[in-house]
Image 1: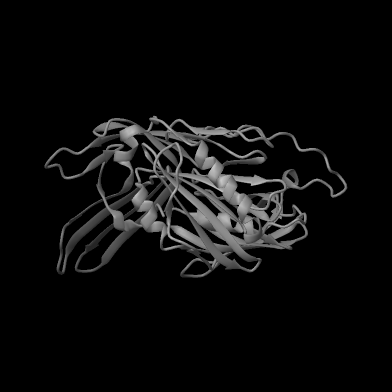
Image 2: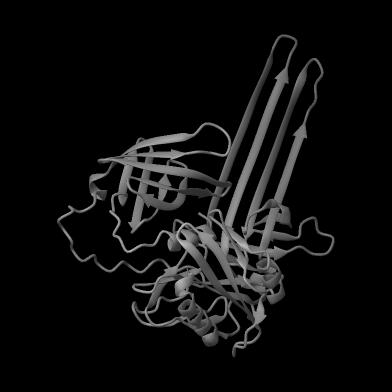
Length: 415
């Protein structure tokens, strides 16, 4: 799901009831492995085939779960259906025939018996991501600090959470109804955030609009604006308190969502975090701001022509690289090749086509002219991609890992 959709689902599907952990575990079929985790009604996992590793997330309702599978080329809805120790996994592409897998629960991934309730061990520390913020002790207010992006703040007492794949931090509370979110947008300005925020936003079909224009908010960290959104959900009206602060390397966005009845307390929580913010010179510096953007590469060639006899061939390669300002990383590649020949007696030809892609987090060190991009992929792999700015008169604007790229803002991504 998108960041906003995941935020709404986490809040709107909250309730005091306990959800069965029936989806959690490892599920297998021929050449396919699906690993699922479940917390209350939130499910997430990965699909592993012989060529791809794809993430997905959604919401459980009884013996079914619904959500989106997200890949480098877009997303598609999915449905999970449980029947005992079997599970049906259905995906529906925007165009074309749907995909269906029938999987069985792996014995190693089976849930514990329902009469067993052992205390789960503390989870291991996740692999470090570039600029990852530390997690404060559970149940206490604590400091969140990002050395890479150059900010720190204190979370309210009792709010605990973790960093998400998109780089944001989500916080929840055991007894207070709502959710807090911290996100940094590299290289953006306060007025850009104001202009974008005034249009409101839609989450899971619910339109949230500003109840009043953004207004200045006095905090020690520097310039800041604050606003309130409201939307009518199936569980009643919800409000979102949003505070945007201008830092040295971009804007820091602090948001809190809660039902209208809990909104007063949520406003206090968001504003207290804003009051505690401190900005400093992050390690990303000018390098990350300069390199961030949507990058595109294409090259191709063709040779040979024929009328009645002869041969011809062609080749093309396209690469897309998304270095998002909030630290998200995606890349996609596509190539095609063909060759054909014709004689007076026969015609022969061959075609080839392939795609590739991956997602993760990124940071950069160096100067605006040269340095390296450090990538941590979703599968934990780490890559270092050298970059060098093109000189005046050069064909390309930037060379990344030896490939020349142009900036191209119309290829989507980084939303």
